Every structure is written in structure tokens, then in C-alpha cells.
Length: 331
Image (cartoon, rainbow, N blue to C red; front, side, top):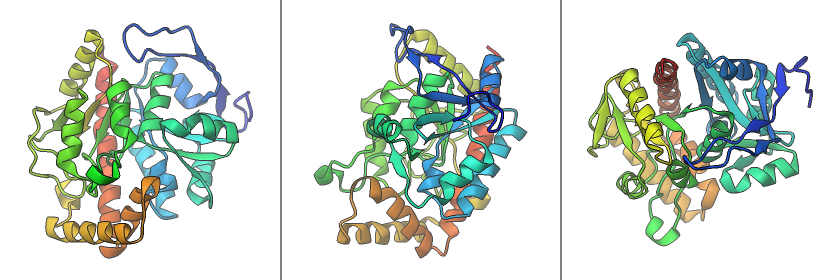
């Protein structure tokens, strides 16, 4: 991997470990973290930076729509005043900020590891490719000093978890890592009430952005009432600052509803999800393969309408995340 930033626009930096709580030691370094020149310069200048995950590229969308979407979301962040920091594991290093060739490589790879907290060290050791989940992206963002992260939807409690114990590591990461996640709620394939309850138990605020109700990913309203809402980026930034000042560990979810013109009919998407879940159960699909299978089947069952909705909400979440990141720089 080049260390002079000449051909890839990347500089290798060992970074101080940010605290996971207000008493944490900051003396350690991160020799496995590599920032692009663009991201490194923005962070050094105190400019707005927003983290992006890479499983949406490697496991969430078909090629070449995954490349188109990744580049469009990065462009949306730049147009709204923030530097994008797409995160992945490449060649034994956690990369924070990817160029277009690296995004293409992730998007077109035939074999790529899905990397969560438990997999980070293994993926680095193996030296191959890894798409980072929400959990792994939060870890890397916190290491780099990035406070805002945007994605489509976070993982959560899967349907049938009472017997399968299938609960995404994203939820525990939100309880421990100080990064705010802007999303369209939880992935609609999940058990939304139980996911909301799980986050409440672990002290993670779920704040509606311009809404009193939890968005349901493909639709703007799940019918589940939230305890808190904010109506603009400045208010969201104020909440983040207060949590930081209090030394409260963990992150926060800012739930931004899908734009009305991109939302799906609730009955249509509900039927597709129910059928996909039944097919997964019948096929013995479990663990980390569950979410990619369900998203792919829902897309097929809706004639790719769900994919188009997914793309639209990711881009809108980027707009909101950029505004919050900009507001945070006005500390």
C-alpha cells in the first residue's frame, strides 16, 4: 500500500485512540487505520466529515447499481458541505475514505467478507477485502474521530429472535460507541418493536428527524411512537453535544423518514417481506447471510421497486447527515 499518497491519494496515519467513554485512555495508536488525503485534511481542519459503510456496496445492492449509489451518496455529501468517508477493509488495512477504483473493486469482487466487530481483526489479518457493517463502520469512524455516520437502515432484532437469538451486533455497538447514525430507521425486514425496545434497554436514544414516529425504512411511519424528535440539524447537533458533555457512552440514532415520493405502499412491501422471511426460514438461511438474502428477495418480489426506494432514502439520509455534521463544526 502506498504511503506517500501519490497514486491513491492516501496517507498512512497512526491515530490516537478516542475514548469509548469519558475515562478511557487515549495513549494507544491505530497502526491498522489508513485515512485518505481528503479525509485526513478535513479532519485536521475541523471540517465536516460523514462516515459511510461499505456492506451496502459489497452485500446490499447488485452491481453496477451499488457503484452508482455509492458515488451518488458521496456526491450528495459533498454538495451539502461534508467530506465523505466510505469505510472498508482493503489489503490488511481499515481504509477511511475510498477512491472510485476502490469502490469499484469492492462492488465487483466475487468473494468479500462481511465485517462486523468480531471480524475486524480477522479481516485485517487475512489481508483481503471486507465490507464493513454498521457496527464495524462505527468502530472505525470513532477511531478516526468522525462523529456522524449515515446509512440506509441499521440492523436489529430479527423476526423469530425469541428462538434464533438473531440480533444484529449493530445494536450493541450503538450502546458502546460514540457515533451518531443517521438512517431511515431499522431495516423493515426486522422486528421493529423489539428492536426499538432493545435500544431503549441499552440506553440508545432513537430520535425522529421531523417525525414523532419511527420510520419503517421503505415507508415513513411504522406506527411506533418515539420519545423524542428534532426538526432541524442544529437541534440534532445540540443533542449530540450535550451527550458528549455528559460523558454518556454510546451513540444515537437519528431516524429520517424516506421522502414521500420514494415511499412504497405499506401493504405491498409488507407482503413481499413476509414472503421473503418465509423463504429464508424454509431455506435454512441464518446468521450474516440473512439480511443480504432478504433484501435481494424483497427487491425481486417488488420488481426492484424496493431497490429504488432504498437508493432514494440513502441519498436523503446523506443530505441530513451532512447538515448535522456542518452544524457540529459550529461548536
